[in-house]
Image 1 (tube, one colour):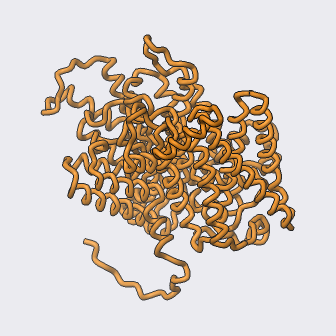
Image 2: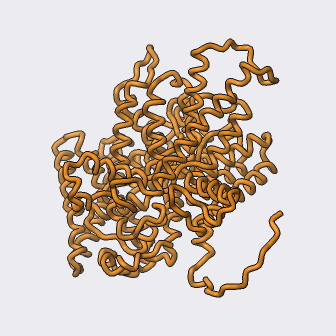
Image 3: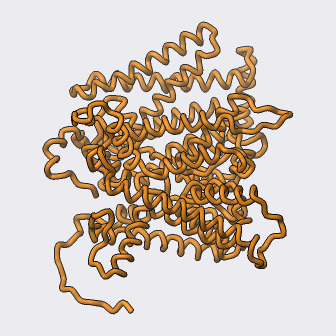
Length: 632
């Protein structure tokens, strides 16, 4: 667990909110309030027809004749009354708390109260005036109230937990629990094409864990409403609900508790506790800016059927969906066949690849690069106070930190090496006669397209999950290369999965140090602590153990080849999303195994086990004598 720097403990401890125990009853009421708010909105927008039993329709029909309204209109009126009651209950709670407030920091909460009040009154006035925008504006206040309740629930939960490390897996579990019934709503799928609860759970888990494996075709088996739900949960899962809840708290003018800071520090690769607040702002703003720019650049790329041209709103929706999916390294698409049909378009190479790389570098690296950029363009380089608002980095903005150097070097090396190996694998059958050789003619354009596909697949396999060439049709040597790249994954503090580039680099450096008979690993004229090497080995072992266990379980029940099963498990454990075409054919048991693997791969098997089993109170300070063991 991250610890406060002793030199900074006194200086920065004031920013943490003192612990205030919250009763189980209060926590339960917050949860019920959030569920009711979501239920009211779902009843209005989630169904093609009112979700009522037969007697309910009869009662609704009888009442509709009395008020001379259609069944649908009366149903909408009743659900709107429920929303109004919930908003009224929220205001009752606000007034009750305001009367008992004694701390100045609590009064800053009234900013969001005023905002909700303004939106609510605006919506009601417009609705009474007959404006069609009135009620949609009113429902914005319902959404803000839901976000407020979510923040209260997050705060209450973080204060009840004795181990802050559990907040991260619980937040993902909470998102999955909310998203599964939302995606099961009739309006999320085409009429008469509902999906099972297990398929809904699988899809939402894949979205929250930014994996991309899908048992249903996202483009055809979900409506725009369902696709929007998937995109929202990709965004929430990519950055983490804790980050969004914390950002919302900062918008409210609230401080974060010490436990929330510890949970965020663990989530953001052990960032210093006193720098978490500024780093959260940087993460959210950077994400919004990069995804918006990416979406705008993708607008011209989408092809449309001449018989049915795509509307601008459809192009905009596709652009934002794929920009979010690419930056969050999720791999979901609404084209129907990933980017295979767009493999000749420059957009996937000039926009999608940069989005994947930026999302996989990690926010600590992006913060370091931003600090350097600000320093380079500043006209006041000699004024150090100018950089006090920069994102937290370990070193001066004049140069890259060791972490950034390792990440950038490893990422570039893997991209180049992966491209070369995949290109060689795919071009070899044209020059060397093998059982897999093809009779298709080889041309310059074919070579160029193969290299372009290799570059895209090399980038996407760490852990975005898009594809420009059909993955099952690639050479076995390419499959092996993709497996290795998937296991490495992205970088710490990013939206990507895998064991992470820094762990791969540390393990490689440790091997080199042993071969050179050096006692410690070194890089960029710095010595790597032995504890870091040991932790890297432990994380790698946990991932390998997860992959072996899941592969064994699937081989017991699934009728696929070993390489297909192994590829599926590695893709799930590293939250990549590439598949050899077996995801839709998994048995219910196989789907459950993959769901668990995706969840464990996202939260980290070592982090979860440490939070559940290990405790610092049980650590011993006893040191035993050393003795060698034969290693072969």
